[in-house]
Length: 498
Picture 1 (spheres, rainbow, N blue to C red):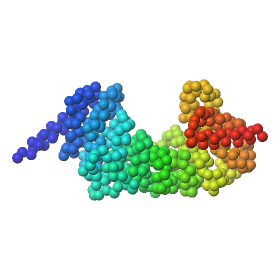
Picture 2 (cartoon, rainbow, N blue to C red):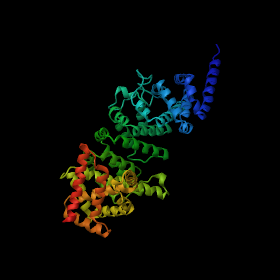
Picture 3 (cartoon, rainbow, N blue to C red):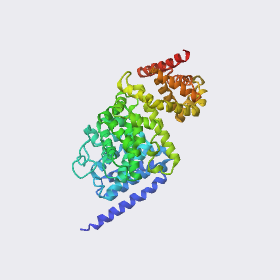
Picture 4 (cartoon, helix red, strand yellow):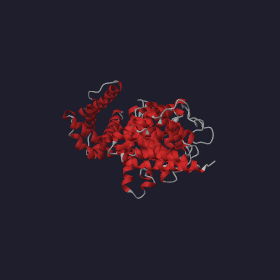
């Protein structure tokens, strides 16, 4: 007879939940919270009828696990995370995302609840990367109350192509669907960031994304929206970067490479390189991941007419135009992005020469690029070799594996400072020399002499790479790579003795 008393009790409950936020300043008390049964009590409120109560509980949990709050108390934070997991937190979040908050576009409380849920997920994965694998498949024995609604709410959702019933109700399934939505808002941006983090955390996440949840196709469709228009603002630009990061992570595994070929991802990336300056760098980065150790992807890149934009960037054309709105007036950022693009380009050229079959039409098309227009790309190759050799060569010359762990550490440090690119350039020069084209060989010797370098330096870089990377390594793949590199070294060495 007095409905106001229920309202008063909910207000009191909400105030008590907010008062608990002060606990985040004293993480040493987290074990006491667990001992007193606070964890199951708080989690029981995630099914409360009042969305504001649910939101405040999720906010509380997120703040308790925030990196700034638990920086000096990782043990207590991990223990609290484990207690949350043992009390079915992931299952409750699945129900919250798939069933409770399906009207976030129109309901600000639901939207805020989703945002705080994403913050909680980020904090948990940051504390314990193993949490990522619990988000791949539905944790509840039965579907959540809204599994048939989909992540976008409002009607029956369409499951992604290739999704399994065990995975379709998971947190990752919700993230994929949420990232794929067309409307630009802060939750879509945050969901794209969390999805990229999950895929960068574990190979299991990558496989589920590509093989069980149809994630590759969903995210490629999201990228395809920008074929004819650039992102409208900085938030949308960051969203697109996150989508590309997620795709790159998935492309690292052989299973991911297979799915991207089925989805015609490389064709889309070539289009993006040609038409959308803002997407040039992330599209080239994706192709670099996709082509690494994949002959089919390399051949598809050639068939998709990717050599045109690739060698345009190789010559340094259009690099500054891809820096994006964030980089306007910031010359250092433009230089950094141009340098990153250059590294991806060199890596892709190396992969093409490494993986495209000998005597194939595709390989001949790659090789012919260095001979066309009076060998300008060959000249550019030697120019880059000279630039990186002078930058990193002297420091690398003193390294010998026999010097022990200190040399290994210095070698790894130099790889990140330019030695890796120098090695890639050495491989490209070696492959071109091994092609046996007299005109190319003559031009290589001539231009290298102009820059004060010789083929002997190329051989020395490759020999050092062999010693540090392959000496003592065993396995079918390692043996194949060792023999290939050894063969290139022998071809150059023989030419030096002739």
